[in-house]
Amino acid sequence: MKKFVLLIIAFVCFQTSMAQCNNVRDLKVSFETNNPSSPKAVFTWRVPLSGIEPGRYQWEARSTGLPLSGSTGLYYSGNDTALSAKFVFTIGFTYTFYVRSYCGGGVYSAWESLKVTQCAFDPPILFDFSSGLPPCSEVKLNQPYNIAAVNWGVRQYNGNSKLYFCTVCDPSDATFITPIINFKKDTTYTISYYWNGNSQDRYVATFFGIIPTFGSGTMEMEFTPTYNQQTPISFTVSSTTFGGGCLYIDDIAVNKTACGRPQNIKLENIKTNGVTIRWQLPSVGTITNYDVKILEQSTGIAVFSKIGIADTFVIAIGLLPETNYRIALSTTCSQGQSIVNSALFTTRCAATNLPYIQNFESSTVPASPSCTSIENIGNPNGWATDAPFSLPGFSGKVLKYAGSNNGNSWFFTRGLQLQAGKTYRLAFK
Image (cartoon, rainbow, N blue to C red):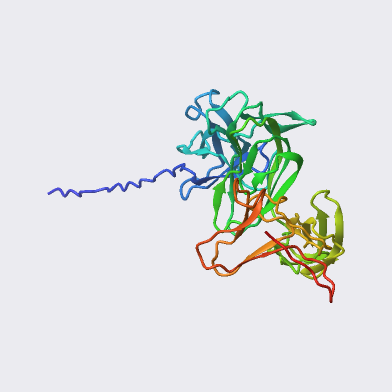
């Protein structure tokens, strides 16, 4: 009998999966916009979580078309080992950024993409109009006035390109709006611009309020937002009269403040010849000392100056009575000099010699004449000047009290020089 041996051979198949060339991850974009003439986009990504570690990365930035679709719409491209791409881009233009892994041997991953449009700037920023209106800025006509004569534009003035607005005997209502600026919470910024004007129109600027329309100079102020915000700076001209003239604006700048200006100026004990000035510490900078100047408003001439004050107050004397002054107060820090903080005041009137006559003809109705004053106690309607057309026994301007409340209101003339022991006669109509 033959015996058969059944030989069973088992074949064990081991299936080995080939490692994949996977997509990049965490594709992000940031912007460097402090130089408006050469803003940059920075794209970054991370290596894939698994699979073959790429040796290189291929990327394209396109305005139109799919990756590798040709030169039409291709803005920038690259093929290198870096995990980032950086290039100049046009503010306000929309791009799609594509990137994929290259794992060698002609093997690529799928494309990752990110579509971006950037119209916001991070300080420090300077709009100098050397290349025309900034990208993403806007000119808006608020009323249907003469567009040819009422518009914002850029032209040469005194050797530099400047933003300008001119009217030729036309009413006007138009706004220039800068690109959006990114302001961060609890960060102090210094905002400034240069102006030169000879217009009778009315101009208002964001952060600054009403702009002077005659003369020239640099406007500066500090701004500390209490929350993160994105906002532009706008300039609006508004006039329903036939004013005429031009306003030029240049070098709109936003910078993080390194040395803060003195805060909360208070004026105390204003006299005929002096004033006490107090202020609070700046919120930014390592403070060394303060500089104080007092200038006549009409001439701009400094009549009082103290440099390098360690205290937060100063007593100024030697001023003239009944004179308008401007205080210019700044901080010196280890980081440099602050911008100026200002306050206006008028010294009190000196007592006058007799005879004294007050007929109210010098007043601008309903205001009181200069060097007089009114004190309202309680809630009366108070005193005011008037120019009635017909009032028996009166002609010209008068001082009038008119009120329905119980009266407790006082009118004071300017101070009078009186001598002890003399008798004086007071008369009024």
